[in-house]
Length: 107
Image (tube, rainbow, N blue to C red):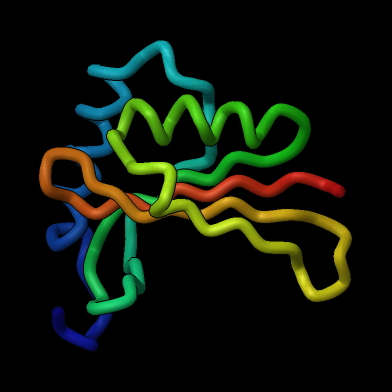
């Protein structure tokens, strides 16, 4: 992946995949979505971000995780440094496009 800024053209196939995912999986919980750069343990790629916030976000995370076939042992659980909230995070893919799924909940 180039380090120069992406153009909309370079993001369009990822955005199309996001639109397809939302059309094909309409029963999943609503979330905040992004199309952009993802940093995985092995590479920097263009992908889809899915963020869930607030009450019920961990349950919604599980629904998304199952739909994306992300194994339970691929989920990272941590607290922020101040201990005010917890985070679930996992990397998966949809139609060969990387997906970063994460949920935030108050302690």
